[in-house]
Length: 77
Image 1 (spheres, helix red, strand yellow):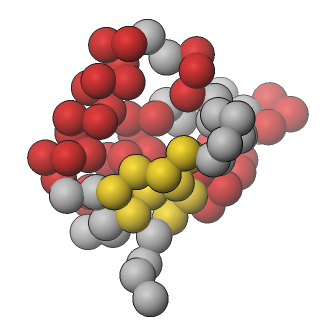
Image 2 (tube, rainbow, N blue to C red):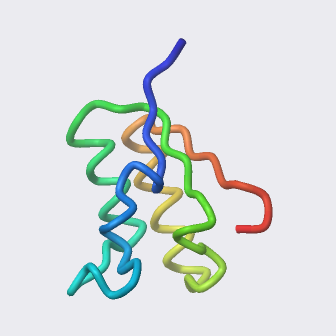
């Protein structure tokens, strides 16, 4: 078994019902994984990645690869 986190690990950090004044962005979620030496990160549909630009996706993927974090994206995200 391998330890991982998901965007569902931070449900109130994405502005559910306006709960977060400054919702987390994907790179911040990745940084939490990196800072805690977590090597698996799943992006759920509570943080849609299709709103990101191609450059933002490339930056996210590049940082994850550099840090050795495996990314997983739920279908439909």
